[in-house]
Image (cartoon, rainbow, N blue to C red; front, side, top):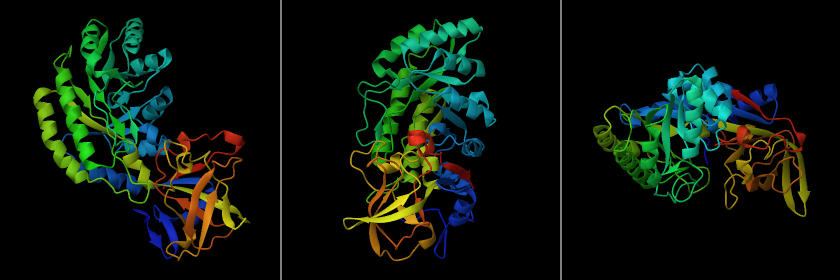
Amino acid sequence: MPPGGFEVRGAELMAGGRSVTELAGQLGTPLYIYDRRQIAARVRELRAAMPAGLGLHYAIKANPMPEVVAHLAALVDGLDIASAGELERALAAGVSPARISFAGPGKTDAELRAAALAGVTINLESAGEMRRLAVISEGLGLRARVAIRVNPLFELRQSGMRMGGGPKQFGVDEEQVPALLVELAGLPLEFLGFHIFAGSQILNDDVLIDCLEKTVDLAIRLSANAPETVRYVNLGGGFGIPYFPGETAIDISRIGAALGPLLERGRAACPDAVFAIELGRYLVGEAGLYVTRVVDRKVSRGKTFLVTDGGLHHHLALSGNFGQVIRKNYPLAIAGRMGMEATETADVVGCLCTPLDRLGDNVALPETAVGDLVVVFQSGAYGASASPSGFLGHAPAAEVLV
């Protein structure tokens, strides 16, 4: 896979105008590098492709590095959070609470209280959560801002991770929502609208378009039972990025063209509503690199192993232990040997005492020596924060936004 938006000068890989080798020398390895210009370009591309007036939200869970959050906060219309810790990061980025929404099952009373006091929109995941929040709101003397997270009846079988359809811990089952709205009308809560998120990491345009159509139609049907004017509809996201050979990028122009008439239909039924999409991986995933240094080179019974100072404790998804059914290699290269002919095949492994710590199996590479830098592409999302950094007591990876 080519280096995408990353520049190559001679045999050297660049990020944000800086040499990856230079950055690794200054900051050490293992290291995550995020390119701010690529993130901003992705937002611009989306703005140009999507219908006018569609809100664009960033899901902090994809990459919660404070500098990344602050960079995106100035580019998007809202931030979506999933914990009190992410709430603190969103507020620290200077974002107005009115632009923050809080989703996720199992919110504690302390988290609900903090979110209510801050004035963010709380996406209710169950009747029990709604009732707990109502008691908290009454005790605080305010009406917490809420939306109903809906678990739709439809299921996206071509999504990397299914967030809706069938029994799920996420959201309120579609068929239970009307009764919940009746109960909500009598509680000290300010109803805003709906959050409907069916799946993630979708690479099929037709599946995405069909999902958006079903989501808009569902929001329209549910709005008939709303206790107040619907002012907010989060259509979810699910836009995927290619990681492996044979995968292709989605066509956002085609998706945006299809979404235009759907939004017109939604606005006709809910004229006061702001419609938004929620994206994480799609905004940051391709703008990130994971860089780890080769510390040993060995041959075991005819197979060459490149042993690095990184591993699954920093990048769990890379090892194949974060959702993959069959392990596949992320695209990787040697930072100072870009474009050079592959002359050997090697297994790239991490430094942990487990055979699961694999960065690349049977990878064709230029001859690689101890001290060389292995660079893994598509590493801007679900990397450092989604990995077991405390495993075996190794130091965490450094992170930099350039």
